[in-house]
Length: 159
Image (cartoon, rainbow, N blue to C red):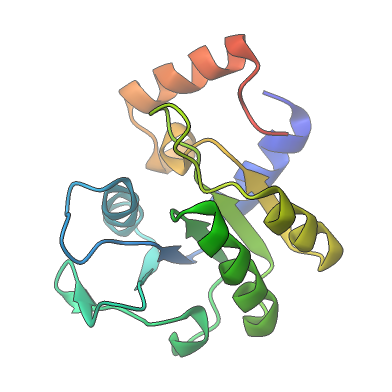
């Protein structure tokens, strides 16, 4: 893992208020909901975001990042890439300076949008473009750490 990625991951996971954009109102087994629960269960203040849901996992779900009643420190995005573009614009408007665009192991499934990455760089938003936060730090587990190792060997970890 590069020192740049290590620094970004350490900084992101050191924050306490995290939004998870893309949680599902109908599929509690979704990657987004799993990430939401893991952050919640490891002591983070977590805010689910889905414009089509009033509640998720039994708590208030926010329609947008701007609707969250506090400024969050970072956002994990688990959406289609074209939606990621809008979310990073919302981050800039909401004063959020850390973004993690989820990249899964399931083939081409990813939230990474190159135009969103460029936008983040242009607007001084630190971005992790790929991988999964469950591969790192206190939110990780053995399976995800194994996948991180394989990704590292294959050169598939983000910079």
